[in-house]
Length: 63
Image 1 (cartoon, rainbow, N blue to C red):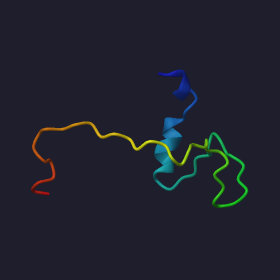
Image 2: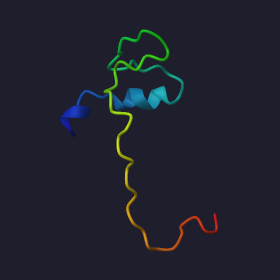
Image 3: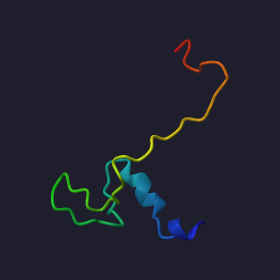
Image 4: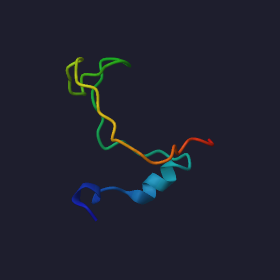
């Protein structure tokens, strides 16, 4: 198992999905419900991400 997940209690995680509580490992301090101070800033004029080219059939044609 990876070092990142070594301390994870997966049994508690399963119980959490059944209505039990699981404490968050990190609780960031927030100044309000719209506080974004824990996120990195990025330039608003960042270049648009390019989509990879795809020449195959449209996967949503009969959707």
